[in-house]
Length: 160
Image 1 (cartoon, rainbow, N blue to C red):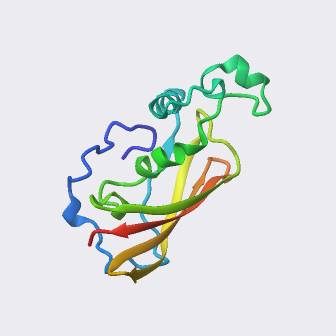
Image 2: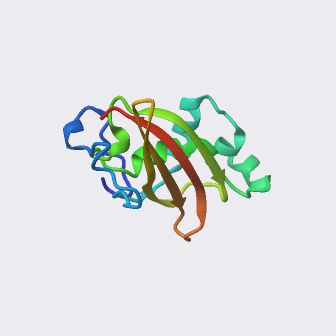
Image 3: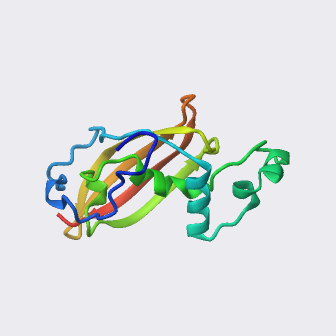
């Protein structure tokens, strides 16, 4: 994926699924490959519309400039979009049948139009419970100034 474009963003999560790592192949501590992405105002606003959040902090530049944020920002939940925008189609998190078993997110600074976001992500643990394959993973998003935008820890149940 190009860092400044979503032109090659694969929307078919089934494509290449057999090349993705299985639970046995995922190693805690091993970083996953990622690609930086530069957020545009259009990306932020499209995401906000998609989730039904019409907060003027995402759309109205005059309003946002007068706010404590002093400019447009993205919805905090943009990390959900960025998780997929910053990873390749072969990433194991895209495995069809993966179930989100929970997550916790902490926000530091808002993501803004023009920010180049990079993701550092890895599995931190894996275990079997009631015959289900669990992966615990941590995702940290940084802006171009190496400030943490947000960090999250999640639990997924793997299909294989």
